[in-house]
Length: 348
Image 1 (tube, helix red, strand yellow):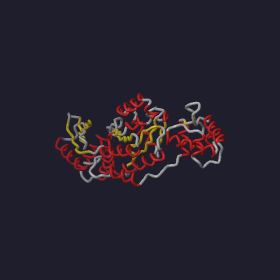
Image 2 (cartoon, one colour):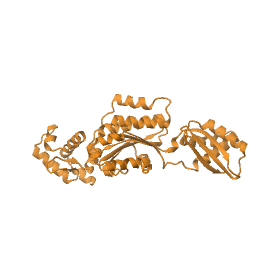
Image 3 (cartoon, helix red, strand yellow):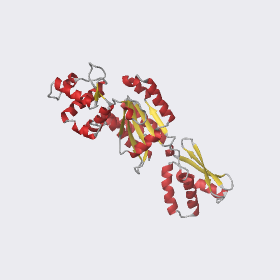
Image 4 (cartoon, rainbow, N blue to C red):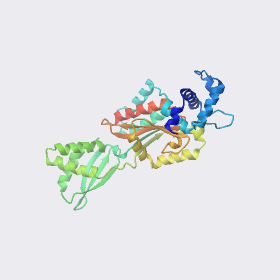
């Protein structure tokens, strides 16, 4: 539907539509003129409300699931509501404290913080909480260079979570074994507890300001190994909690095959690069509704997603809630927004 059609809907019709959607979000059931009248705040007859609902249906914002029943919002209608009529609530003090307490506990690793965040947001939203992060945010524990042959070195990157990554560097025999040991020790002491994106920045400064040859050679070696070989962002971390909550929704649970496909998709991680890229382009919280949801293609599901950033305002991941189309957006949008900001504080 074009923006012009939206603009043509008068304030009275918007108010009726808003009340109907709010009733639907609360109950999950169709609403008719009588239900809307009982909500109050209208100086209209039941016949007038029915006429307005009929017009809204012709515009594609509502549909009637049964002949005698009331109406429910279409996906277009939900999008119209979210884009222009939704009033966001405030996140409660207790919810804020809950999120802070769980995510800001000292001693947690990067992965633990993300896992806890997805649990917290699942619990507070009563739906599935999901956190996505690129693999290269792991903190480094050990760096080592080993000569493979006369022209190649292997860079070994050992991370705090136990993962080990090997990368090949072409050096044409330039560096001897003694220098490689010194460089390994120097870089391990320099870059322990830092992730790849932080190390990249430090390397640029090191190369610019290095006072001695070891610093310069070490930095150039690791720059070559890290910058020229891109981290594998196509296999991100996925933290998902509260999947069973989705089955509580009557509309969603009717289509169990789609739910299974959703979880298979998450396990395969096949579309999450798209989420990170989409989150990177977003200024804040994004809402994906029903089949317009580029990830799940499920008409009964929606996703509220926000990027989280580090101190340099670089987007390093995304957090969100997956639930039925009739999510409590006014509560969940500020919840997702707040949790994304808390994660950002923890990551640095």
